[in-house]
Length: 141
Image (cartoon, rainbow, N blue to C red):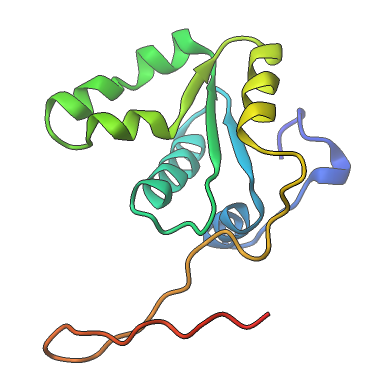
């Protein structure tokens, strides 16, 4: 853990994939601050899950510090080279001020809405040779 984590909110996981699983399971939003490979891994995991529709609810993604993010990642180059669509740029926002970040999150996440269940999609295992798979079973409450 880094020195900026509130001790009561610190969770340590033995396996990194479990951290990301719980991250996607509980998160309503992510504010990514400048970081290294771990930050990039978590950021791109959440963007990919959002882009591919694997999340059952939207997760707001904010990148804090425009000068850092615009230097480190050229998101427009992904579009230019056909790796993502122009619309995928709306999966995240970039902010430079705590007040702007809070305002964005307050507008994007209704206060009265509470998640009904996990934020990640359930998988369906399909072993049919023709590729047709059964519809997922309805979720039990």
